[in-house]
Structure formats: C-alpha cells, structure tokens
Length: 162
Image 1 (cartoon, helix red, strand yellow):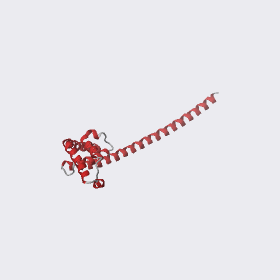
Image 2: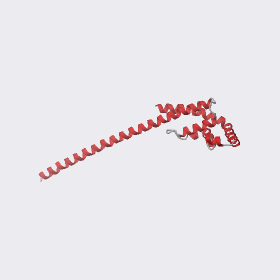
Image 3: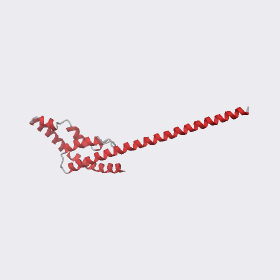
Image 4: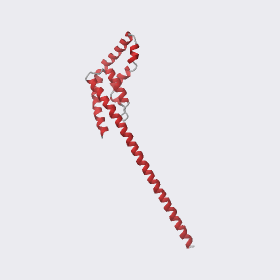
C-alpha cells in the first residue's frame, strides 16, 4: 500500500509542478500584454500632446494677431473656436473663454467666401452690420478672454512639454 501512496504523491507533485509552470507562463504573458498596453497608451498620449502643441501654436499666433488688431475679432473668434474645439487633451474651453465662443456661435451662420460674394449688396451690408454690432458689444469681454487664453496657452504648453 505504501507503494501506491508514493506513486500518487509523485503524480501529485508532477501535476502541481506542471500547473505551477503553466500559471507562471500565463502570468509572464499577462505582464507582457500589460507592458505593451502601457506603451501603446504612452504613444497615444504623446501623439495627442503633439497634436495639441501644434494647435496651441496656431492659437497663440491668432491671439497675438487679434491683440495687435491685425485680425478682426469675428475671423479670429471663428478660427479660435474651431481650433480650441479640436484640442484632444483639454475640455470645457467654451466655459473658460465664453465671449470667444459666443461671438463665433452668433456669426457662424453668416455667409463667407463664395457664398458671401453671391449675396446682393444689401444682404452683405446687413450681415456686416450684424457682425460689427456683435464685435462691438463683446469687444471688452473678448479682449479679456484673449489675455486669459494667452496665459492658458503658456500653462498648457508647459504641461505638455513635461
């Protein structure tokens, strides 16, 4: 009877060793998958950061042009709104810079480029008046938002560079 127990014990040790080896192999694969996922996520975050840095560089140029009055507020707010909406690692910018987005939302329905050329003079003048009235109404708020946006750009670029 001792012989049977010895054989059973040897078989049990072999089975347990085999299962332990298999479990170790699975843990190693899991660790490799986790590391690969982390590398993919890091690469994705770096790509998003690069995208945002490029967008913020364009935003910085537009802000400076608007502050130096080289770009009218309607065109600048239009461009800024579209660019800021395309940022991947930032959110709720419409709440941070409300006047920029307000002007954009109020003028985005107005005709531009070829559509504007197709309008008769009276319609163009009406749209110009509407745009200029909104610019004048929001002027001081937009100037304030531009200053805030300039500081925001500096902060975000610093964060993205780290």
